[in-house]
Length: 290
Length: 309
Image 1: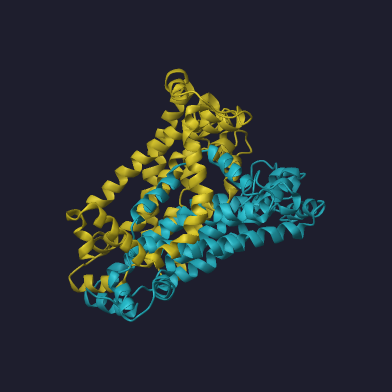
Image 2: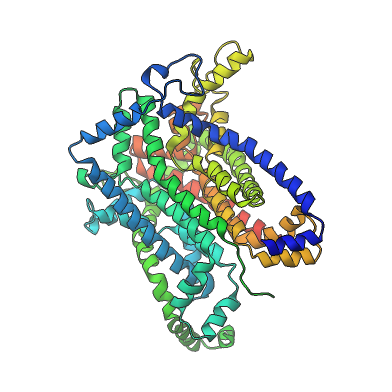
């Protein structure tokens, strides 16, 4: 950073840039206010006691904040036949497996497709983009048929495997890796490194922003896996399914529903903060000059 | 490599032998690609391929699909006025939300990039959170048609209106409301990918640029940043196409299903209607097929745009 500033300083741009930065800050703050207001209202809503739900005119703050909605939600959750901890375990287990496998598979695949120029690589690239664009509700039925043929219905496999190969993650990584200079890989090859080492020791550490972004996407998607028709055994269901049930069963539904949504939002936000910190700390220097 | 380029001049057999040699030489690559491809083929490619011909069948999920030729497509365009309406809604929707939120994604990602580090995380979080969870139901309270709705209450207080407006059921406002909410949640995957892209631009390029006489942010953006960001911009474009063409769930949960006068009835909602409400899966897949073709055309156009300039 200091290095860049020095260069910029020599062009007498510092004052100019500071003014611009303040303008940007003001613009983003105003827009941010619009973006954050509904989230703020949702959090307020989740803390409203029943008698405040229908106050007129509607208030932008809570007079008497309470955690009753959260308590109601957990009361419903703890009265189920299957202990609540089981759902937590299922969700955590599925999320960890899916996120880990997704990131490893997609990173390796992306490296090959972006940098190895293999026979058939172009076709695979096309298939991946097409699979992103093709959305149809019939796919779920076909997926069910495939799962049934493999005897995976009602197992953890049914929750984990369909999400493991994410075309979106691979596409993201591939696009990002395209900017890695070929010289870097050639140099490593000359030094005698095999492709596996080049991929994991050189290219992927260099792609930290994309990698961290992928972790955010994977975690978020995995955390919301419901299983749908693929699992109907109660002991295999995940948190989103039961939290949804609890939200619909609460006494003051608007409040409890918001409490459920806010509760489910916490883990992805934490992961987001941790990963985003890594993204922002990245200062890219490839060390290769043309 | 040179050998490989001369393939065209060689005989077929030799060509095949060279190709095989190249494949064998790259076997490490294929090995690294294998885990992804294995799972991807079984759980995505096979179901997709199996679902492609369904548009030509009559399939109710109970009996086996029955081949009916092009009749589903004929019905769609000739006899289904709601489908024509849904095309119109989807196009309006995609034209509004697609380009606008794409520009917004890029602009915001760039502006955030110009800020000091601490602020970067906070702003990225604020803009990204809406797309993270199903919190958009809160908009139901904001746009609620009675006096308890936040928007109505504010407008009444200010004296701008005298009676509450039915935002969610009045056919004049329904589509507008859905577009606003869709824009609100649209700073998702594309936005984050662009943020990551900005962060990964080689700093030395900016230093070189400064030495070569680049004077302000605009010049930096046009001469250094955009060329370096092209791959991420294509990713964001694909994500944007998918999210703006396949939108439907937001509308369904916000303005009801079906919406007043089908004003917010997108193609995806139509497919949902036939697939999961009436169980006419063959017809539903024909609908999805048409949507897919539209998205493919759009994708090709954007690819061309991003490559040529």
